[in-house]
Amino acid sequence: MSQTLAAVEGSLSSVGYGLAAIGPGVGVGIIFGNGTQALARQPEAAGIIRANQILGFAFCEALALIGLVMPFVY
Image (cartoon, rainbow, N blue to C red; front, side, top):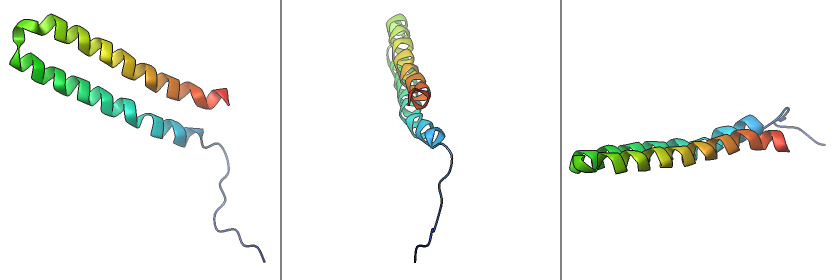
């Protein structure tokens, strides 16, 4: 006697992308939060801090885009 409690149908890739988007979202928050603190502490280093923020943001968003593309690869 076999009884099915729950059936999973369709693609779980949307769930996977949702989980994959958590990391870059947290990373972007940390980057800009700490960048704002750094600008408040050392306003004379604004150019360097802003450049590092943009670079870190680009890397985090690249991770999010990779997470978006990977469900379509498999």
